[in-house]
Length: 360
Image (tube, rainbow, N blue to C red; front, side):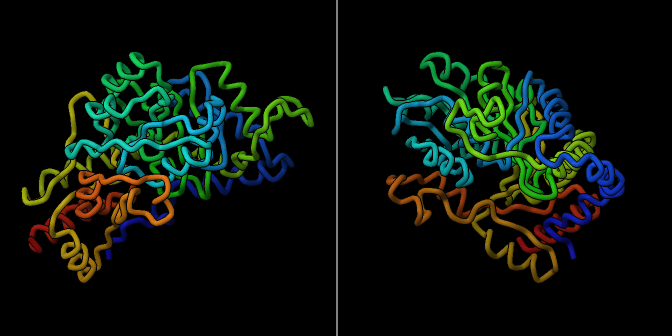
């Protein structure tokens, strides 16, 4: 059996130290916004090469808060990729804004910078990009567009902890929104998220906003929300963060084996020279996707589909998105995610590759 993911195996090497740290956590008597949260925020900001980090309860909350603190007029427009995970679009809607979908590049699966400008109007206030699968977006072009039209860059870094474009870490180009959902490369043992920024004014506002809008206890400057990372999650994330480069490097090496061994009949991820792809997901595409998935399952090899239904085809979003996106449809109808968890070994990747080649 080759699991797609097994969190017990992925986190096994971190559990012993986590168990040892728990006693001091219990003894502290401080379970919300304590010392471990403060230290994790410092350490993660340093990892992302940003001045500040504010931890929150989830990646979705990170995006909602990042959008809301700008106090854009209601129905202002935010550009997002048409093939992103639904949370990115949900955040825009929950912030009272209008998502404007832009098709991705069929090669990178990230938002196509060449198609952004045609969607910009007087109501456009920002670009919320997703570094999908762990591959960074083309930030040089996006930065030029942002500057030309005075747009705020928001980064959905949920799948891209430690990814780099031109040597710069994602989450440091604009306002970085991060998820620590357990299956991420930097996964917690529950929900968690963070916002990174270099702006001291935004930092202070975000820090208050996530705690009922309070800068001082029982004094609420903003109409904020309750979105705080638990101390127990911060304890675990601090341990795992020290190994994140190793996690990313191992997944990159496993991806290279796939790229070398898989048949040319399969459309494989492109690794560009000016980027660091961290392969949260190793996705391939094939018109025979469903056959490959089913045949692999018969051989006890599990895969996933990220994602089977494009955002514009989701029932709950029909009133927000009313257009046709053929490139997004093509990706969602043919994409398949292969096993590439931290616990997988080279032999697993070789076995999966040979099995797929045999099926084809």
